[in-house]
Image (cartoon, rainbow, N blue to C red; front, side):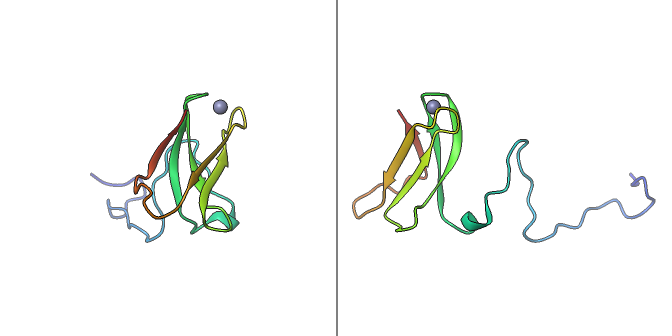
Length: 87
Ligand SMILES: [Zn+2]
């Protein structure tokens, strides 16, 4: 197999660049590098990332569709799960 340009038929994998799912957007610069968890909002059946808040004691966000808030506290004895469902 040859590429259309006649060059090598391989792709150089650039560090830091990764495939993303369609529709996924870059987080704001202020959120890059911040820890996040995955949350499913059962109210609207949507998934999203929830980022750690400024004080670092919880993950907080709102449902992207209905703005319903979700808050996952961080603390000793807490879960180490990285996926949550907001009922
Ligand atoms: Zn919702």
